[in-house]
Every structure is written in C-alpha cells, then in structure tokens.
Amino acid sequence: MATLNRANRELYRRGPDETFATLKELHDHCRQERQYSTDVWQLPHTLQPQVADGELSLTLDKGETVGLNDWSFSQMCRLSGVSKETINRFHPDTATMAFRDTLPQADKPVQLLTAGHTVRSVHGVSYTRLWNAELIETIRDAAPDFQPPQTAYNGGTGLYCGEQDMFAFLIDPTGWIEMDGEAFAPGFFVWNSEVGRRSLGMQTFWFQKVCANHLVWDAVQVVEFTRKHTANVRDGLLEIRRQIEGLVAKRDARRDSFAEVLKKAMHTRLGSDAEEVAKELSKQDIPQHYIKDAMEIARAQGGFTIFALVDALTRLTQRLTFAADRAEADAKVARLLSLALAA
Image 1 (tube, rainbow, N blue to C red):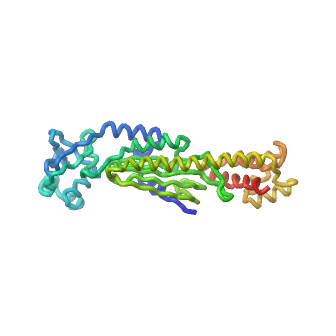
Image 2: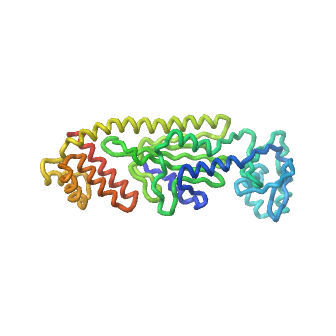
Image 3: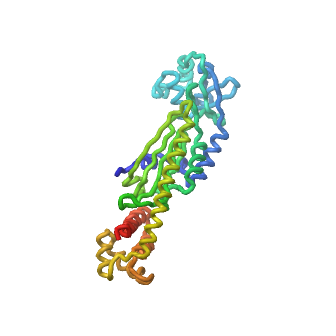
C-alpha cells in the first residue's frame, strides 16, 4: 500500500485566494475565467514591447496595451531566448529593447491568451487549450457523489485554482467497500492548466485514511493518466470519464455484495456471552474504552449481533472531534463486518 502526497504538496503551495470551498464554487470561477479570456494571434516580432507606468507591457496589432503576469513574462523570456533572471536585472527601458532585439522573426504567429488588460499566457501554434471548466464539468457529471475531503488544518480544501493551474482532490466518503478483509473508499486527483504550466492529468486510487494535512494513507490500485496539450488533448476528457466510471462501477458492485454481508451480520452473533464478545472485540483492535459502551448499546438493541455492535461502535466514533480520527476508527469498525463472512 502507498502513501500519496500530491494533495499534500498542493496544500502547502496554495494561498487562500486560490482555495475554493466546493466544486461548484471552483467551477463558477473557472467558467468566469473562460468567459473573460480571449485568444489573440500575432506574429512574435510585431508584439511591440514598451514601458507603461514603469512596467513592461505589449502593444498588440489592434493598438491595445496589455501587461504581463509572472507566468506570461516567463513565457516571453523563453520565446525570446533570454533568461528571466537576466531580464529582471534590467531597467524596464533596457528590458524593452532586449525583447525587441530578441523576439524571433517568424512566419507563424503565437497565441496570446488575454484577460482584460493582462496576458495570461503565450504559446506557439501546436498548443491546444483545454479549459478548466470543461474538466470540472466532466467530473461533476461522472462523479456526482464525490466531494472534497475534510478541510485541512490550515484551511486547505483540496480544491484550488490559481494563475497557472487547477487541482482538485475528491473522494466518496460513503463509498467504503471491503478488499481482502479491509475497508477502502474511492478517490482521485485531477489537474490541468489553461496556460501551459502542466499537463492534463488524473490519479485514481482506493484509500483507507486521509489525514489533516491531506496525505492519503494506505492507497491501493493507484492509476495515473496524463495527456499533453496537443491536438488530441480533449480525448483525455474521455479517458478521465472512463476512469471515474470504473471507480463508480466497482464501488457499486461491491456495495451489492456488501448488502448481503449486512444481511448476514444482522443474524450472526459475535459470541455466546458478554465475555466472549469483549474478547473478540479486543482481538479486532477495538479500543477498550469503546467496548463496554458498545456492548451496552448493542444489548439494548436485542443482542450481540455483528450488525448491532458495528452500529453501536459507529455511533461512538462520531463523537470524535477530528475527521481523520473518525475515519481511522470507522475503518477498524468496518472490518468487523468481514467476520460475518467467516461465520
């Protein structure tokens, strides 16, 4: 089993302005970015760098003056073949002259993605954009039951979008199934960039625990898929949909068999008396401070069936303050159901 740290890395590099509480909020933001973004095609040597208000800017063929953000400035430096560190040491007037002297004389245009008076990105003709909103629409359609994990200790949600890229971490908190006697739930990461910062990608997995810093513990069946932003990048949406549908199909198939397990658990006793039941619960790594209370609740429900004990223990674990602790305790409780199969 693996520990996945991709969401953890995103957590520590994102600020509050890049963090969204729900997938709908993230989707609304990405749709708005798409609505206000426009592609401009122009030969690179006609971009006319100049200084406006002490900052480097570009004058486009239509006469509009646009500024650069950090990412598009980096792309302009690469297009010109001049290091960003070198340009940053120049006075703005000197930097302007450096760009004018080094922008390539080409017969193919570059595409500039503009939003308002700012250039978001600069690309060659081979680049094909996939909008973040398109990716989220695919996710919302294929995985309506999935949602972000518990909020991290620093306020991170697993849903991020910034100047350069987008990332989403989603799980199905009710999708627990049994594999080899242990409980796992499905989840996935997806990422994309409208401005060329990273490829389109997805990683699917089944996990046992997500902690407060969004490390995913004890992950199995980890599958990763990536696609570059070339002409066939939209085929990647079909693959992402296929992978999500595979997760959902496996979850649903296991749920059907799980229903049979529950039915059997309702009629299977864990032991013949209280002492035997307590010993069996201890053997299953149930904390001692839960055993007595759980047995009292189960006794009031009519006996020490596996289902009654699991139900009682689940009620008790809901009192835990932290979601990560609840998830760990619930996984232990869920493993009790496997005893019904052996009965």
